[in-house]
Amino acid sequence: MQTLEDTPPGADADVAALDGLTLVLVGIAWECAHAAPPEVTFPQTRLLLILDRLGRVPSSQLAAAMGVNASSVTRLADRLETLGYLARGRSPGNRSVVTLEVTETGRELVARILDRRHAALGALLDKLPLSQREAAATAARQLVHAAATIPALGPAPL
Image (cartoon, rainbow, N blue to C red; front, side, top):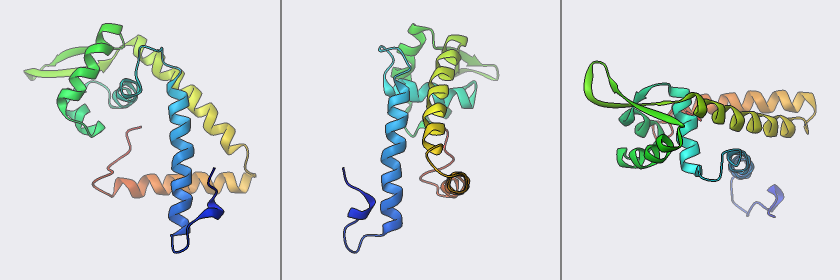
């Protein structure tokens, strides 16, 4: 495993540190997604997590939040609807607009995934002395706010 001390000469050590953190966080997200039943894929899990935060929205708005095209959302939603994790509806103001929302069963699944993720993140933070834990949390909040100012990144829905 590559360590932060293995940063190639001339590389930005701060960027390398964030890159290493990305691997850790993606690993936690991937592992926690396994709280979902085997028939729910990682992309479907991501859709449920984002949709749960957004609430009932048009499928086009969900597609934009996920950074995918509308047909991808339709395919993912088809299976999730069949499994009972989300429901389709119509916009009251425009019946041609399809809305999506997480069902109670879907909310229970999202809660299991988030509980597992929060436990994993808490265990990681518990490895740090209190002052470093607080500094890490402050830095994380600042990075999330900074990311919201970059159009390509936008506000993090997950």
